[in-house]
Amino acid sequence: MANFLELVSARQDMILDAFMEHLYLSFIAVAVGIVISLPLGIFVARYRKFAEPIIGVTAVFQTIPSLALFGFLVPILGIGSTTALVALIIYALLPILRNTFTGITTVDQSIIEAGRGMGMTRTQILRQIELPLALPFIMAGIRTATVLTVGIATLATFVGAGGLGDIIYRGLQSYNNGLVLAGALPVAILAIGFDLVLKWIEKKSTPKGLKM
Image (tube, rainbow, N blue to C red):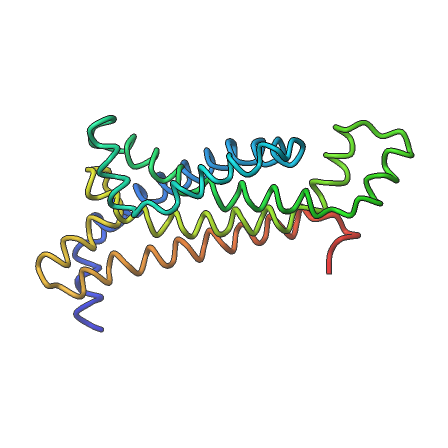
């Protein structure tokens, strides 16, 4: 333990730089994933004939091994953070898209009909009924996508995008378990931290009448 703390102290600048790179990649990928998947999830919930092909395409991307997807993108986008971000965004899409679709389509139709009976427009029903009731599903999808993205972002090192994967890979190459742990531990902390923040956001944004 003492040796590990000494290693962290000696390389704290490198670890901090890698942590910030990892945070940047993960945050941007999840944010863009939300911007794409949330409206798309609402769309396929409205027009369900498109749901199966659209969700199916994102599911196919999800089945591609992470390293292989990075490799496929390198000839097209080159090496660097752009390639890493595109790959991470692709992996973030499915959990958010599927959960948004599921959340909206499982809202009790009698509640929607009551809203229509009160003269609410489709937009008002979406904003005031469907999205609040679907929020637990949507947030679960975002939290899943976030943890997945933080983990996969360690592979960004293989396309020259940096991140904590650099430290883990250096440790593996030199058979230095302390260095591997110095990279892996912040990844776990980052994933847990994101999850706690999202849980807090979910709690704060859930209407009082829906809180358990």
